[in-house]
Length: 509
Image (tube, rainbow, N blue to C red; front, side):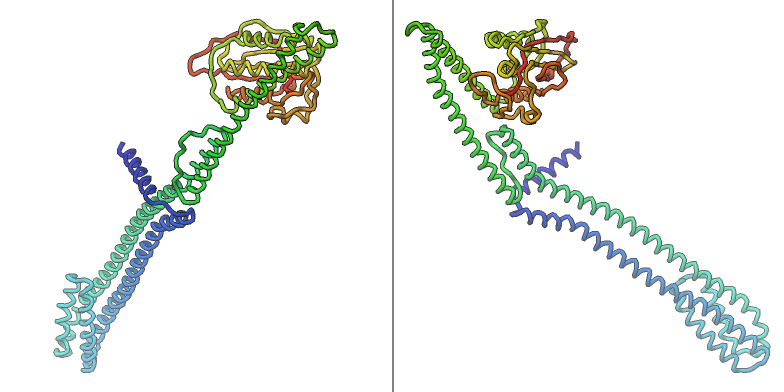
């Protein structure tokens, strides 16, 4: 809980600082990021240099002291030997010059012993040597016979001198171990500092990465919302470098411009539909009056022409409605899922096209077993309606139409197939593109608009389904609609697999 509160507090403070201070350019932010991230590393390098300098100086001083102390201990041992040699020679040959040499060696030994006392204060061997040296300095005043009697004391003097040399070596070894321990402690401290400062650098890197990536992701979301047409009415203001803020303002302008163009398009479509439908209604009303012989009896040839005009007017009205449906689908992505019977939807679609099917002479096979599904009923019906309409327009006169529905777990597959001219390979890649019309000729008075399959594919996609062309089918053209079970909760019971046969839309508007 404390860590979560700390992280939340840190992010909040960072956001406040970011709002109060903002780099003027992306380059400034990147350079600042490099400088701030390198600052802990620079501190680490400085501290490492200071520590290495300290250890180097300590090692240098210790090495010099060790060399001096070792040399002094060795000279003390040599002087002790020379003093004993001079005394023994004096006791034998009785030459006064030998005692002068003894006195000089004793004086040199005393000076070195004073210097060595700073290294080993309170050492018992050093104290003993000092006492014996006081006694030995009185030997030059004795006779050769007296000196000869005192020569045995030099054995103790040599022993203490050797012990002092060993103590000096132990002192040097202890100092080396102390330096080694000091180096280990410094190394551990340096590792801790390295871990702390590198962690600080990584945190700073993450912070500046977030400061740079955040406005970019905001721009990405704005672009995606613009592309999907689902941009919120009040977009968040882009926070970041001036270049990205300027780009966000450009996106705001683009969004406003697109909304303006979309409003103009909607207005144009509304006016166009009204302007087209009004005279079209008059034309169809006139053909209906002529067909009812209101203006007098029509000859067979005249009646044929009137029926042709009426059929063309009806197909023109269908094309206008398809265009309006396509535009409505592009800007209304809401899906209303409900339970409905697939067989009932198929029957309604077939009833709508019953007259056209009879005129076409197509053999329709429809399965009447109920098959419940949960999806958007109106969109599913629109898909089937477009497929049936295309099948009638492009199918073979007197041919076969089949619609098959099969449930596979939580997926429903509806296949609409018809006999007739197969779809060319060149048309397959653009089959579901809006306003694309294939190479096959439409059977009817008017040419198609090329949006029927596009509307059907968009309706399937809005329900998380797919509409594809199935090549493995006995009939020449077959489209497969796949819809998932769009339910928020609940388990479905296993329904026996159903197979429906009905109208297939060739999909070549």
